[in-house]
Figure 1 (cartoon, rainbow, N blue to C red):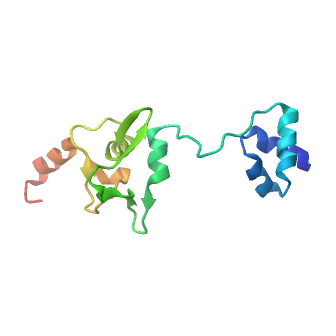
Figure 2 (figure 1 turned 90 degrees about the horizontal axis):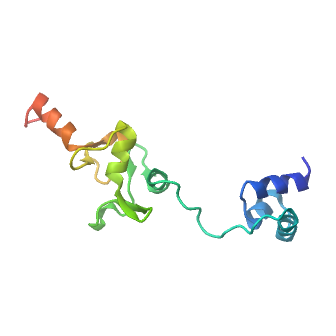
Figure 3 (figure 1 turned 60 degrees about the horizontal axis):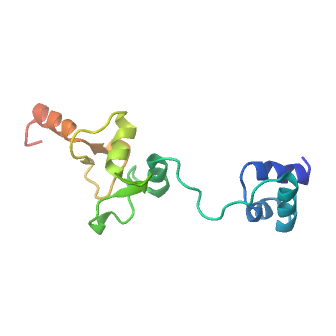
Length: 140
């Protein structure tokens, strides 16, 4: 593939001139000139907006070596949440819906005992906790 073809491919994929410069070792000017020749708009600077609350969830969680996903700044007292589409979404509710393919009933909490864990398989809603208590009793 020629350098020109590679630049065109990256331009159509939405890369910035700077990213093309780094990846292909060409000047930004060459990428910018080719962008103008093709009639493509300038790349908008900044972080690419998240497509969904789930996308924000995966961008911000921090995996641990023992299978948990921690939410940064979890202990700030505000509750773990993300803002998307003008609304605030609880990360526990997002995680629960991803894992169980249904909306949670009642309060969603970490069930694994690790403070700050929001792993989708480690969160439980009120219905799950009630069912657990019914089967195993309060002492469990």
